[in-house]
Image (cartoon, rainbow, N blue to C red; front, side):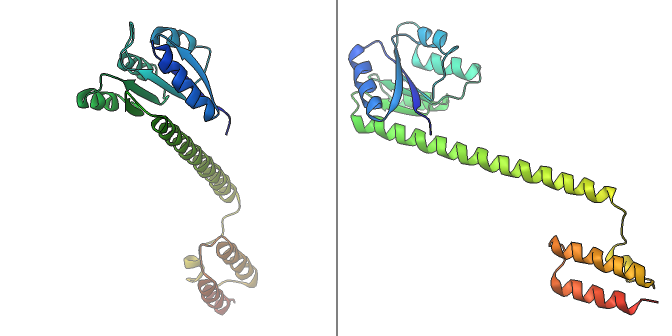
Length: 204
């Protein structure tokens, strides 16, 4: 995984210094901002994997920033940090889509816990994308196989073959057809043997 990139937004330099130090120890690239408006101006030319922001900021608040990101369709995990914590504000932040909520004063392990959760989330999303790619590839192969089969000369279905007599040429073609069905896993070895025996009995 490439280095994670974090934006830290707080008007308190000591808080910025502390969070920045913790993130650097976690091998995360950081960029710091004193106001949410400056961050929004910068995000047009930079990308971030996580945003850690104070709830109360000069101008736009942390919740306002969360709303703005949502309105732009930007799915970036946002962590809200505040010294004015209350149950109501925590619930409101989560309801608006916050990734996590931390109350001041916080400790180093809380920040590390959030980073571990972020990495787990990214690993899960990557696994989901990989699975979706595999499903898409299988669907394309199935469509191509279906188109290929539809363009080939149609052979009678086993049920039709068992209802009428046939010459040796038709019997061979029918048995080959059954062999392909068996290879594709559409009929079992036992069914193949039963169909083959019945076809051979009807050879003129």
